[in-house]
Image (cartoon, rainbow, N blue to C red; front, side, top):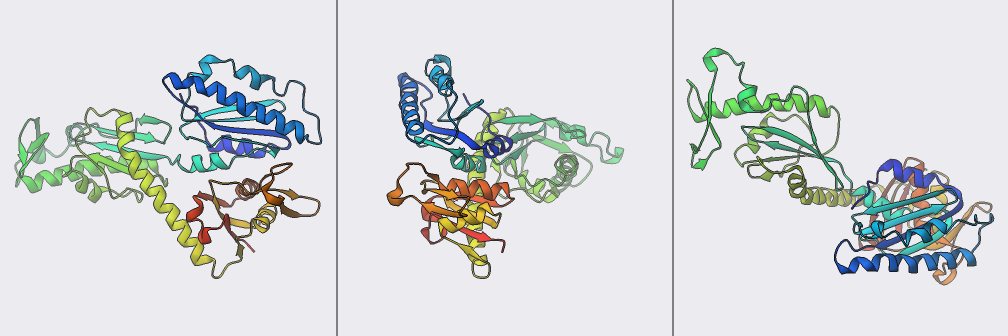
Length: 386
């Protein structure tokens, strides 16, 4: 089972500051006998959290029942038997949030005056919304998808089939529609259209008119959107639709095959590898963009300078390591970030997370990457506004 996690959820977590904020992450088992490991693993995390907060009490005493809801969760068998690949839990006075998500989080417990959301920033970047347009002569369907869900969308004025789209064409060009095992060229076709014209070329022209009507309805629905659109259809239909298309974010690589009978979930599953490739290309583009701008714009790879600059809204774009933490604190009175000696966690938190929160809160861009892909293999690399 999965819980939806959206950008407003992230913003709500980032806005919770200046109080005791406990963040807990763990991988989870979804099925089989191993699901019994889930509550045991959580109990161990909870023990670590209690010790962490007892050794590093904040300026305000914790409510007496602070750990009560978390302890009660260890006995919720239904909750533990319905997990996804990872679990994130956030607790502060008066608030508890749990998110079962398709991401195998590393085990991590952090107590600070703000929540640790860096793993969720990485996750949210993979929640790219995209569309799948399933095309055939008999039907047109549009799926609105993300990593977590898929919905079939009804679009006003969208023709339901080629026959419906061309039904009211001029009488001299009206087509007779039938399905069967006829062939176009040397390929079997689900439908052949007989007219008074020149055969195959006129058939292509008719399909193009059909797809232009589909594109018109789709364009009105998507308007100025920037979400990727992926086509699903037999090979010879895809280039015809590309000719009719005016949506600038149609992807070059479609899903080949007759989509009739494919479920929305099957369409999303086939499209997802193409979206992953697109996200990887965007990350590579962001790295190239950073390297090009770093020559002429102010910036830094020093985590302490980046954290302080983010706090003061100077960071425009931030590339950071998603698979490690830099333990330290930001001293607001002295206006400086300090890295903990020897990487000690006592009384400290992740400065990369701190920088990410303030960068996003001030309209900047944060791109988590594997350390090996961060420019200079640094823990972070930032471009400043001034």
